[in-house]
Amino acid sequence: TELWPNMLHQVRAAGCEVLLANARLSERSARGYARVAALTRQMLGEITTLACQSEADSKRFLALGAAPSALQVTGNTKFDLVLDDSLRTGAAQLRQSFSAGGRPVLVAASTHPGEELLILAAYRGIRSALGDCLLVLVPRHPERFAEVLELCREQGWRVSRRSAGGTPAPADDILLVDTMGELLLLLGTATVAVFGGSLLGHGGHNVLEAAAWGVPAVTGPHMENFAGVTELLSAGGALVQLDSVAGLDSCLLELLGDPARRERMGAAGMRAVAENRGASGRLLALVAPLLASGD
Image (cartoon, rainbow, N blue to C red; front, side, top):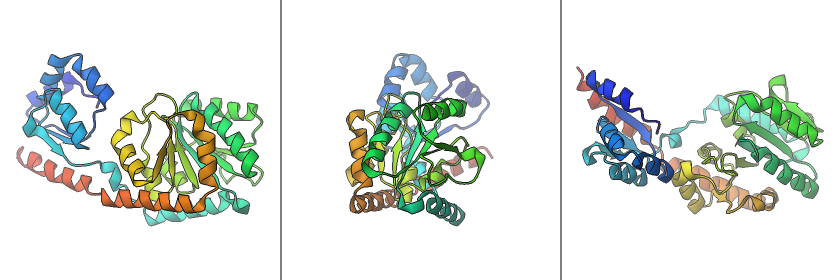
């Protein structure tokens, strides 16, 4: 929702049509735009079509002054992700190597400062109760890789780095993912996934990649940027959203120890993704006449 008034004005002045694709607007962002109501209304008027993820997003744009004729609800294109054969094969091979001796794999995805401490504390409790478990830790920002590596080692964990190649040894506690572009692949190795950005107030991250793999997802209370997806997956039984991070260790431990529940959650996640596909096609149907109008 980073909308730039000058850019939109100049684009329209040049005779171009503007479509805002996969548009979402959180309550928090809507309040921010409402503080500059006149500018926001003028800016939204420069957009030909607002292709919103949900009715709730559409209503927020409407309340800020978007023209009703510009609003369309097309759904969320993130449901249209494809797990191709090469990705599935790669994930299966990694899963086999990660799960040496049958140990579960906990993927902590897109973590932010302060969240690694919470996850490592929960992981210590998990290891105490279960014995063996591999933590695949994926910091959100590459400039923090060295910092997170040092934090893990300071706490006494044996850490391997994804950038070093190969796979973690059976004696390794943590695989630190200090590479880019591999999160979707690595989520395919998970027994359970916990999502960063949600434990502290960062608004959360996309949980649909876990759902597509059939991996149970756990988030903290802060999922404002993905409220619709979180509500959908929670209602369907594919995701656990914690009211407080204080319950993180007990929740993860319960899921790791309950294969039947994990299977139910995984099936619910895959079903939710399958039932909500199609946003990309609906977007293309909106783009086609805009392109034709410029002929």
